[in-house]
Length: 417
Image (cartoon, rainbow, N blue to C red; front, side, top):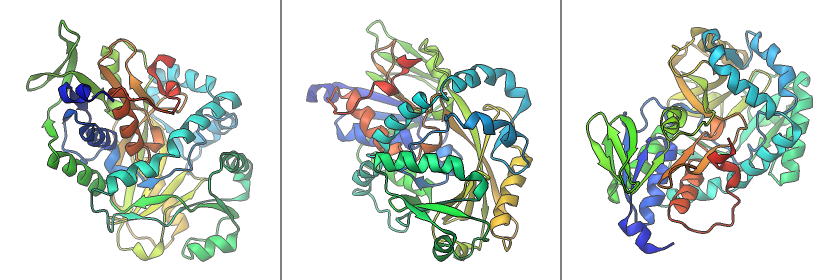
């Protein structure tokens, strides 16, 4: 990197979720002057707060697979299924769905798998760099993650297992006895499973995010709690960040607003087909003894993670945009599914709805705007935003610093749309 680039460069980062705070951390380390913007305090009710807390370096096989289209109708009309639609949003979703369908060929699936694996393989080492500088004791557990299923879900599982085997992902197939030995309190409805020993989980995603944010402030970063209205440009093409309170001038801007990024990319005259998968969580408190590590029941598309707040039950994919209210049916579905595995659970608490930023090819956007040389993007990580926060921050900071990399970054470019 040319050191003069960082010393004279100020960077505005718009969005203080896990992508934004990790990018802020790495840019600050490279000598940039960094200001982080968000309309809310970091960690408040966002996807970076409410996610499953998984660090999932194995999860490269995407949802856009040839067999998924056969399963979608059954998922939509199943009361226990993982997929739902807000029917008032269907007209807006049609263009996204058509693009998604085009990306459901085996060739497209393997392209996504290859380039998700490229960054997932580096995800945990990138976090470890950050964790060297903060205290994460009691906040990260290294116990792996278990997926399990019944016989009727076996075929699609075999495909994932074989692809991950080819990629060299560490995985151990489990029979029912082995699942029971690891997690004896789960109701014995399963026929098989797989254990990912390299996976970790967060006991509190919010606390980890806030520790990274506090380190950023301690090292000289700035935070402004302001809502971004518009990005304009000076006559020298320097970005002008217009907020509800002020106009700020920067050398470069990085957009890390997750599902809310489209408002700003539209202003950049880019037609990036970003939409949102709405995800839910609830907590069951006082049942910490039931589970040692995260588990995912694939037939019903939900998972349970042991956290400080209790057993966090997460799941469902609901297509309904950013404005529709929380669906009580989805909450009820999560609660019923959790009690199906653990009949002893009592009443749930903390009903939460969040927004996963998702693109039709299930690859994120990481890199420069195709229209403005001083604008950069890091969003669209769908179910893997938490896992990919640190490596995305490291990659995008290198791009902004004009460093060379041995990674092929073209698959993440916004110019693919």
